[in-house]
Image 1 (cartoon, rainbow over the protein chains, first blue to last red):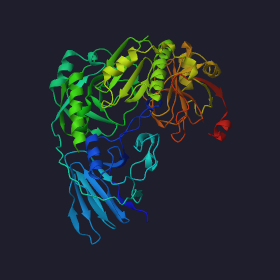
Image 2: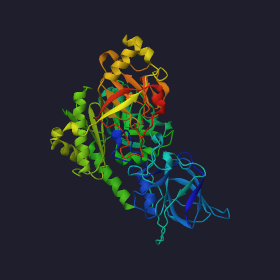
Image 3: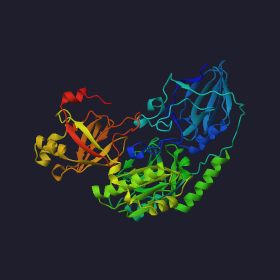
Image 4: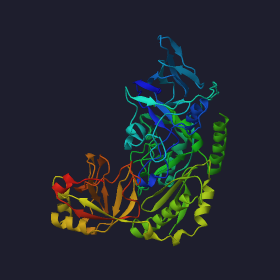
Length: 310
Length: 229
């Protein structure tokens, strides 16, 4: 008997993701992959998967799924409001960061993320997805990945692998980092900006705007004045780069970024603060703090320790 | 020559080959690109995620859990990649193009600006031996050079909202081919029926940085009946 979820409501930006697709940026293919690596790892750990197993990522409003099949061992990570609706339409509030079993006919209704953007649904054994160039990550802009490179759609079926392993419910505490200070290193074109703008960038608040998605996060705040050149010769792009076009309003490039670009970059978000950054909802205010490479590298060690603790 | 290596955040570096945008500089970039690609394949260095050449730079991204920027920089500095034979990895690709007025949207602008007539522009374009400087922005999109100076023209003042897939455009000394429908500000001179990008193929992008390209003129009927492999 095949086991699957039927999608009764897809949610607004639900895609399959893993750690990303690499080694192809020189052909124009962005790495993509999960936005919040900590929560992605957590949902996999909760169901006993390896932490690189493909999971369902949702943003703001998640999907409503009905289980067709024997049972499924699943977990939801994030700051998420969700319900389990059983066959008799009894509604039970879902428990976060804890694995649980769903039975045939049960529905899982991921209503919304709370004061955050991304959450993850993992299933023991993993989803049945075909890899494209070594990854199941979805890059919607280029139509690459499972589901013909698209977001989940209504009435589609999501198949998963079944297994008879002894399933023990796991629970982990997860401290959601709601601090609004984002640590950055100086960008390649830091010197393109006036002294005043360099100071403004590290002292004034920048607001996350609605023009934010998996590709980039547009900010609004004190205009950054470029005193050298509005454009540079197009060069390769790195996730977390803070580029600043002619209007002086910074854009932080995220996982689905274009592979090359021609705007000067004032800063780069350090790896340890990336997860915290992507969870900021429109309207949030950010402050940037300058750090050097050694601080960034030791912050990463702490970040990884936390991941391995799950 | 590699002039400078700088950090891009904590998990990337950029190798800067100077300010010139010309084939000589770009060939140096691609030598290092080929060397890094080989080194990753032969497991000479671990943790490298992406290596992206552009006109005058190569950026390298890595997994900070596997390798640190100091080690990657040391690896580059301690290897003499200049001996990499450049021509071994590059190929010549012939690309069909139809210059029919239906597709050559900006030919009138170009005639005015360049003082050349349609046939002369086409002839110049067909006679150019193009070099693939880089691929990107979107999957498979090549940036080719160099056009002769008499064809140089600026970007459109107002970019088009939609440019069809396969459109061939020129700006300054460069030529590009739109591999996806997208907005864009290049002067469109024709269209190719050739599908340059297919993620399902083993080699997803027909072109790689460092390849050579020659255009071949086809008529509208050939364009419409062209079959991609």
